[in-house]
Structures are given as structure tokens and as C-alpha cells.
Length: 176
Image: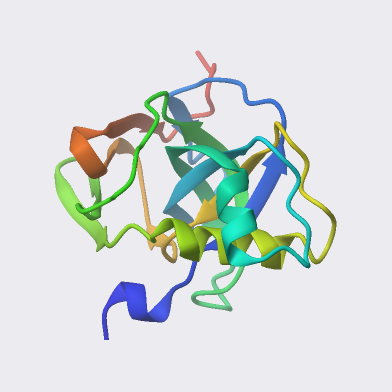
């Protein structure tokens, strides 16, 4: 069974503002993990009753993202408490034929197929069951389960040569 067979895009967070940063910290984390994200920007509302096609048309753009978090050591594969995120600046355009490749200091941690826009739309309508998603919102969708992480250079490579780099430090960000 492939990673894609086991994992479907799931909502991580929504918002309208993102502070750019490429530095993350594992300070204080017992079980740090990384997971690749796709950040979808919406141009119109997404409601729980929307069809897959309507939700897909609400997506203006997709960007790469990485999330550093802490896994619950008593619940492998369970919830992740996010502590930092890095979002790419390059708009991805379908069709996405290449997989996402996540590396830490040059070592492959994860190689997963990029969900097609229809799968992302299904995840959006599922998220809209809790509340309507609004135009302008940035919707972060996890596209694979978390993988163990530590200090180093994280690289997320995606379709059409897109990439996202983040430095993960052991010390608190901004500490002298």
C-alpha cells in the first residue's frame, strides 16, 4: 500500500494572514515531526453542501508548505501539535505529475503523490462542515502523515521544479 492509498488530504488550519519565515525550532519538543502541506487560497466561499466541482473552482492557487510539530508519543500517527509553518511563494499549477519529496539534510523522509485538485476539493467541503470557508482564506491541508524530524535543512520538492527550504534549529528561534 502506498502513502497515497493510506492518506487523504486533511485540514490543518485556516486563516487570512501568514508571517513569512524559513526558520523553525525544535526547542522543547520531545517528539518533533514534519509534514508536507499544500496551502490553498480561496476566491469564493466553500460550503459543506458544495459539489466537488464547485469547491474545486473556489481554489485560486496552491502553494507548498511544511509544518513542524510535536507528535503525541503515546499515539503514533495521531494528532500533531503545530509549532511552526513555512509556506512557499511559488504558485503551483496543475496537472501535478511529480510527487512531493521531503528531505532532511539530504536524506529522503517521504515521497508522496500530490493529490489531484478534486481530492483537495473534497477535503475543503469536509472542512466546511464545521464552518463555511471564506474568500481570501488560506487553507492548509496535510497531504501525508507526519515523519520524525530533527535539526537540519528541510527541503520539500514538488511539481515543476518547485521547492521549499526551511532551516530547523535545536535552539529557540531568536535565542543568542
